[in-house]
Amino acid sequence: MSVLRPFKADDLFKFNNVNLDLWTETYSISFYLNYLARWPDLCLVQEAPNGKMMGYVLGKAEGHSQEWHGHVTAITVAPEYRRLGLARKMMDELERISTEVYNGYFVDLYVRCANILAINMYEGMGYSVYRRVAQYYTKLPHEKGGRDQEDAFDMRKPLPRDTMRRSVRPNGREIIISRDQAP
Image 1 (cartoon, rainbow, N blue to C red):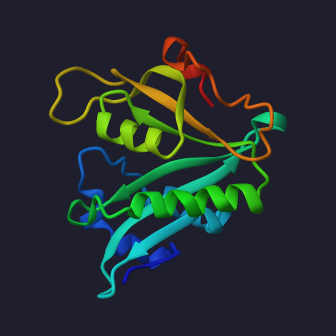
Image 2: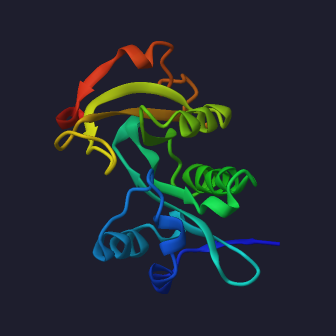
C-alpha cells in the first residue's frame, strides 16, 4: 500500500524516475525548495512501500479577491505507476487543502494543448478549460522550432467558495490570451 505524504527536501535526490518523462516540467533545485518553504502543505509525494517515489504534486496558493486559488504547478506519476489513480489521489488532497486551509475559489493548472491524455484526465476530475494561453510552453525536445511555440490550456475546477461558478466558462477553448497576460 502506498502512502501520500509531505514532499521533503531530500526527495529531490529521489525523483529522477518520476521527472524523466517527456511531459514533466523540471525546475531548478531552488525553485522546488522555494515551494517547500512557502507552501509545504501543497507539496506532496506518493511513495511506494519500498520507499520509491511514485509521483508528486507541487502546488501553491495565489491570486487576489475572487481570483484567490490553489494552483497546481506540477503533477506527475512515474510511468510504471500510472493508471492506478495516484494523480487523482494527489489532486484530491491538493483541492481539499485549497478549500479547507486556503479558502480558495478554485484550483487551476496549465497543460499543453497537445497533451490529450492529461486533458482528458483533468476533465474527468471536474476541470474545464477556462482559456488558452498562446505560446506558453517551449517546444518539447523531439519537436522542431524555437522557444515558446506551444499553447497551454488554463484549466480550472471551482471549489465550494465559488458559488457563482465564475471560474467556469462554457467557451474557454475559444478565449485566447498572450503569455504576458497569464499570471
